[in-house]
Image (cartoon, rainbow, N blue to C red):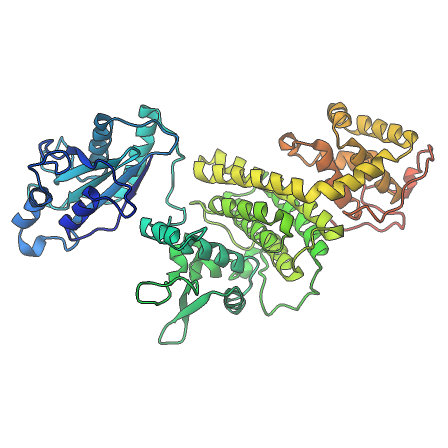
Length: 576
C-alpha cells in the first residue's frame, strides 16, 4: 500500500472535477464516494441529484467561515492511496476504513477530537482511492500536519498487515524522490523508457563515481550530454547546480531542470563535495583523492578491475568490528564502484550491472552519516575503473570483470546483512536485489573464462587431479566433498595447478582463501575459490594463454614458497 501526498492546491472544484472525471487516459471508471467527514456528503458519482458544486461548497465552508487573514493560500490537501497489482481488490467498505485511518494518522481529522477538517474519499479504480480535504477545521483552527507524509506511511504498514496486503518495507525518508504522476504520464506520452528524473539521477550518479573535484564532476556531466547550470553566489562561490535532458521540454519549449537534491538526497553539491573534501584528521586511511595530487599512470581495464577486486575485499573486512560511520562510508563508496563498473562494462553484462548499480543506490543511503576518508581505496578503485576505460568483455579484462563481480557480490551481501542488523529494511532489500543482478551479471561475464579453466582442468593428468583433491581435503575438510562434486571443480583444479607452477603451496593458499569468510552465500564455492586463488597468487584471470601442466606426480618442494602463500620463487613477497 503506497500513500502519496500530492502538492497542495487552492481550487477544490478543480481537483473534484479530476477525481470524478474520466481521467487523462479514460482510466477512471465508476467514480464514487466511499467515505467523508460526516458520512453524509453528497456523491456526484452515484446520486443524480448531487453536483460537484454542492460537494465543493460543503468542503470549503470552514475555509470561507474563517477570518480572511487566517485562511491558508493553498487550502486543498490531496492524498492518494494505491495497492500493489498483486493485492486483492478491497471492497468500498474496506477502502472507507482505510480513508478514515489515513486522515486520522495525517492529522486531518480525528473522530476523538470532534472538530477536524472536512474531507471526502473518492474511488474511481479498483486499486486506489483519492482523499481530498480542506485545511481549516470546523473550529476555525488549522490541522496539525507536521510529518503527515511519514505518519501515513506508518499507518500504511499497519493496514497492510491487517488487510493481508503486500508488505512493504518501512522507509526512513532517505530515499530519492519518486517521479510525480505528471512526470510518469509525460514519459508515457513521449514513449520514453524512464522518466527524465530517473535518467538524470543515474547519469549524475555515474558522473560522481570516483570524481575528485568540482571541475571534474561538471566536465563529466557536460561530456554525458546533459544541460548544466551552475548556481553562483555574488561572491563568486559555487552554491549548487541543476541539470536537464536536452530533449525534455516544458509546454513553453524550455528545458526542464532538476537540482541535484531533487534527484537524490546525496546528490546535492554540498553532499557530493563531502566525498572529496576530507580533512587530514581522517588519519592514514583518510587521505583524500585530490585533483592536485601527483598523476598516477592510467591503468588498463584489467588492471583497474584487479585493483578494484582487492579494494572490495578490504572493504568486506571492514564490516567486522568497524564503527558504523566507517561502514556507511564503505557502503556509499561501493555504490560508486558499481556505478563505475556499469559505466565501463561490456555489452553482455551492461544491463545487469546497470540494474545492480541502480538497485544499490537505495542501499547506499541511511541515517548513519558516512565518515568520509576511510573509503579512499574504494573511491580510488571507482576512479581507476572510469579512467581505465571500457572493457571489451573478452581476454584478461573480461575475466578480471568476472573476478570483480564475484567479489562485489560478497561486498553487497555484507552490506545487506549490516542494514538488516540496523533494521534498515529498505536498504537491506535494495542490497539483496543488487546482489541478484550481480549474480546474473557474473554468469554472463564468467562463461568464457570459466569454460577455458574447465577445459584445462579436464586435460590435467589424473595424478595432478588426485594430488590437488588431497590438498583440498587437507586444507578444508568441511568443504572438500561439496567442492569436488561441483561442476566447477576442474576449473579449481586447473587454478591450483597454475598456482603450484608459480611457486605457491596449494594447501596453504586454499586455507588462506577459505579463511576469508562469506562462502555460505556462494552458489558455487569452486567458482569463488578460483577467483580468490587467482587474485592471491597473482595469476592471470584469463588462463587461455597459460601453458598446460606436465604429468609429474611428485609434490614440488615447499621451500619454493618460504612461508606465506603469496611468496614467489624469486623470494620476493607480493603486496596484496
